[in-house]
Length: 285
Image (cartoon, rainbow, N blue to C red; front, side, top):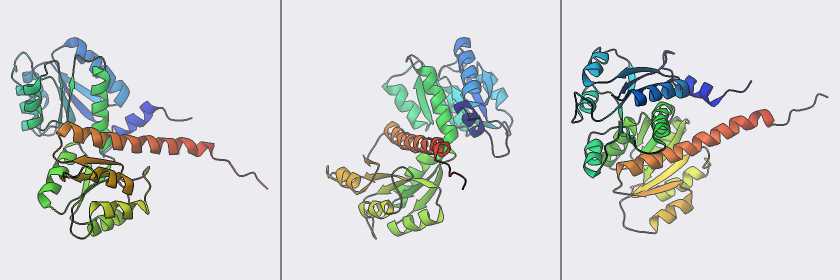
């Protein structure tokens, strides 16, 4: 019997010790709470603890061993009208996705400065689907290892921090040669983020070398540069890169580009697995 998508997602929503992941849902609307709890448990196979106030949230998370994998929280609650619930989640180092009906430029700036995992606006038609997808993405990110290649330590650290916040496994390389060695030592690397300007070989040359051994459906490569050359992106893509971004980029763009490339890999892997039962079987002699 083939596995359903829910079976696969439930398997992914387990801790290293085989326990179901726990999600802390902080929302004062009973309708939203009921709907989201049902979707999280049904679609993702996680355990959900619900809170309707900051006081309840503090009680639920007061134990250092609370075991919550992620929090989904509204910005404004009856006893925390100024994002106190979000601040508390971040104070206890609980990765958080914001689910809010209030959204404007100032709110966006405030949320992103707090380094949340993601945000979803309630008043869209696909709000429930989007918040479930956001949690699913954070769960599945644990299975992906990304190589960050940049000869500038500061830039490597910035990219790595953004990816670690999204629950990815990270490997760093300070040169093209180090990147090739890292790929050889970590064959489970699925995505490479590479800067263009590097000492031993530039990102264009690294991309060409990688493409000799790894096709686009098993290894995604994203080029990055702060160059003003408008033709650089085309050169990278011609060399075999899957995508390209110019610095500086906004956080949402970075997250979306990473998610899109990881999503393509996931779909390609699913197609390969689905094709295995269809392979012709050898007839007995």
